[in-house]
Length: 202
Ligand SMILES: [Zn+2]
Image 1 (cartoon, rainbow, N blue to C red):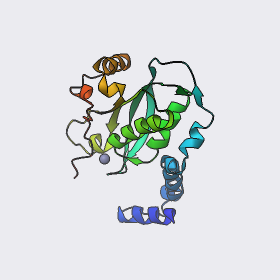
Image 2: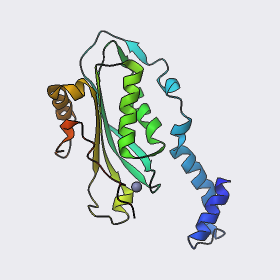
Image 3: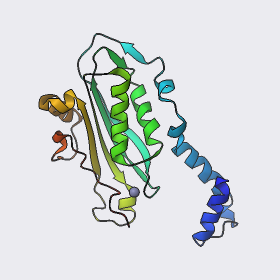
Image 4: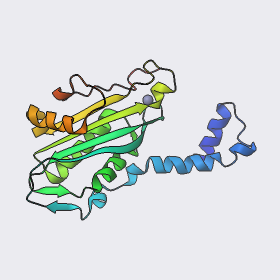
C-alpha cells in the first residue's frame, strides 16, 4: 500500500518508477518511513521499564548533547540537532541511558520542534514528579535550508522549563551555563520558545 503510493508519487513528480534505479525505492522508502515514525508505536512505560529508581539525591541531573533526528510535520523533511535535558529529582531518578531513548520516542514522529521539546519535558515530569525539568533543543531544519528560505544556516532553539527551572532564575541559569548554548538566546530565560521554524509556509 505505502509502496504503491510512493510509486504514484514518483510518477507525479515526473519520474519513471520502473527505471532500474527506482525499482526498489518504494520498498526502501516504506522501511525508512516506518523507522522514522516508529515513535508512534513505542510504549513510554516499556521504554522506561525498570529504569526508575528511588534515590536520595536532589542535585541537578543533566544529559546534554543528545543527538536526535526528526521529521517536520509541515514538509516531511528532517530537522535534527542536539537536545539537552535536565531535572532535579524529588525522590526518583530515570536511568541515564533512558533519557536519549525517551528523546528518540518523540523525535521519531512527525513533529514541530516546540512540541517535541514540551513532550520530553512533560513526560519526565509525569513519570518521576521531579522538583523541576528543563529541555532545550537546538536544531537545523532542512525545510528552511534546502528550500532556500532566508537564514539558511540558522538553527532554531526551543526550551521547556518546568517547576524550579521556571521559578528560579538561578537554577535556570545554572542549567543554561552547564549546557553552554552555542548562541546567546535572548528570552530563553523567560521560558521562551524562540524557534519558529516551519511557521512561514510556502
Ligand atoms: Zn518544515
